[in-house]
Image (cartoon, rainbow, N blue to C red; front, side, top):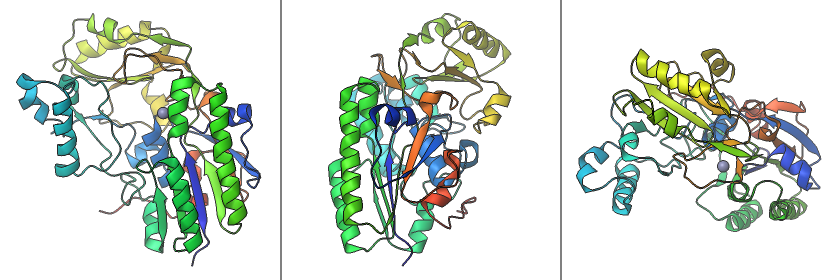
Length: 377
Ligand SMILES: [Zn+2]
């Protein structure tokens, strides 16, 4: 059997956060600072697991602009009866997406208006933690399954239970690759910000759990890491009002997507493009990202599937209201990866070569011998 590996992936385990609260499991002496990728958890997790940047694996954002048909197209026919703000419409949509489209990836419809939603697509159809979940790239999960026993727990399992089940799996010894993903820290950080004592106590709980696992099972390689950091929110900007004041129409002139830190626009024609760019250039609290910068960040999609115009907030600023909601949060990620609060961190029982790397460079460390590359259907 291959060498046993245990990976604990804690969503939003930021480098600054662990420095501030003093998180450092005793048996994991090696620490590497990880630069994240531009985007949210889907982009970061897929980049970790495939060892490639978003433009290579293709899963940059949870929602893209639909080229042809949209999985939300049935909203058009339902319009006279209600939009996605109606519970029964949402339930029907969820049923359709899971049963007919067989989408197993995590998604949330948030507060996206129907007229926009019916023009969007869900680029990730499969869970990042399942087989074939790495977009157009092979992921370490694919290779781990090819090699033998795999133990994975993700969003679907409560954290305590996931750790209990990991302990049992290590006891029976049937798997060689183990991965537990937790989202509780991310959710607390959005709600309370990074400095609250409850964040420190949550980190201590993880640390104690990891210490006790490692003292019971000293042989496997242990790696604990995050996918991005978290920045405390200091202000917000309203983009929807000035964009709507241009008089441009959805969907004839443009289709917007207002995320918490990014606004993306699919535009038709030069007039719409110029008017939207002008509003965004005037806005404080963020800036437009040009093609060169998108290319250097590994998120350039020339087909416009993620938008022809991309606006990014400065660290600490959020777009409010946005499709993520109209209530301000205290912590947010999805900023430029160069912002120190966005850095994540990796603690490991074995030394990793390098003190500061991109999270696209660690797949071969998480699964030794990982080959990666494009996936053949
Ligand atoms: Zn988050």
